Length: 133
Image (cartoon, rainbow, N blue to C red; front, side, top):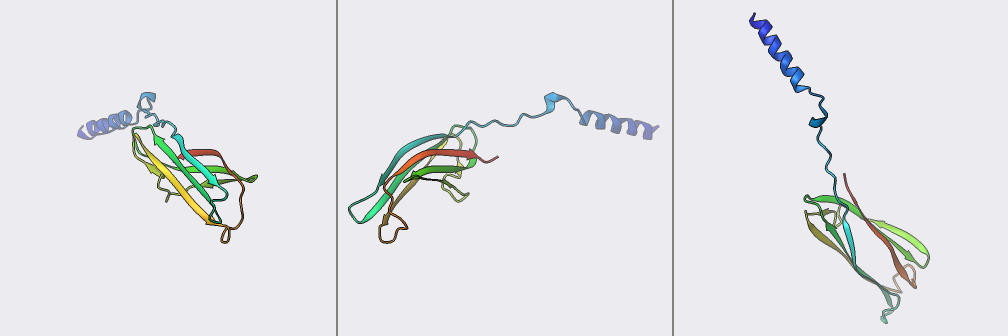
């Protein structure tokens, strides 16, 4: 008799523990997209010092209530050559705290003597931030 009662209790626990009710399924968190602000973008083809300079600052804003991790892609057009630079997990903006921002800064001056090529213009085409899932 004790074995039958024990078996009945185990069977009831198994049946109740394996509910297939759709209400029990947790919805996946949906994250808002990262907002992007171009704070500054400037290319100087001739600085007067026998060099060229590229300088930009981009602000990535996380509007979510939790931290995010992700990669940014910056696409530019340098004299007709369109290239995209994809960040790595070593980027300072790879992880952004909840409801905060991260500013990516780049400022490089390159001498015509050491540079690979002289560029007349660089235009910013797009900036994207893809949240890692």
